Image (cartoon, rainbow, N blue to C red; front, side, top):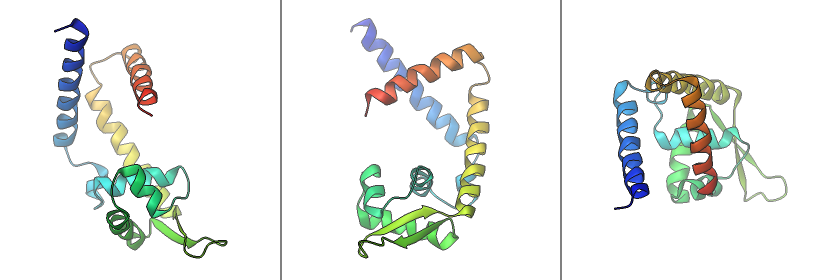
Length: 142
């Protein structure tokens, strides 16, 4: 096995370990406020701007029906609102409400705190290098 392949295998293993550790450390803010990962991802997508259920479903590689179900929960909570498109009444836009933005901010703060604990043993310079490298990975996966 080539050295590069060994590094990639180690990265995959370490990433899995980090994920498991972050999940078992303590319940995240999203879970504390009663939403699941899909609902959290929907909130994060809507932070970027209005979207339709179909667009959320496509971004999450799920069906429109499934996306509609988890968006319904966010609408019921008052964190997302539906608005009919003025030029096409069949199209419905989803937007974060002010309360949704506040909840998302609290959830993100908790996530930063949780990951801060995971990164406590690396220097700021190492964290900066990690961010650069993961940014490259994210860009190349688009």
